[in-house]
Length: 155
Image (cartoon, rainbow, N blue to C red; front, side):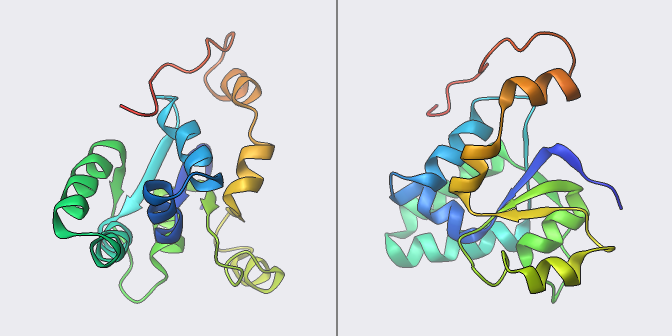
């Protein structure tokens, strides 16, 4: 199955960190939110996992508000029961990038196991921020001159 460089999955740890902490998760997610031609893909299982963690770390009202916002941003994909929610989302959503803080997902062993089944790269959010070049990606995928961000990532 192929993958699209404009399709991105954020693991539940990144989704939670984006909400609570200034840093690489928020920087990476701001890139996604700032460009309407980039797509965050996530299964219900992945969003549920993040929402449950947010509810435990804060309160049910914040978790419900977050869920409403993420459901507006994400493209839902059907997950595979029993599979890792982020990897399943990447597979089903044909995402080229998975953002995760989980060292096990970013390991060479995991990359070797995924090779041939899933054409995606699991990156630390800071690595994604360093490597993504929105202008080059836009020119290659959308075509034409990069107009810059087209959405406010904080709205």
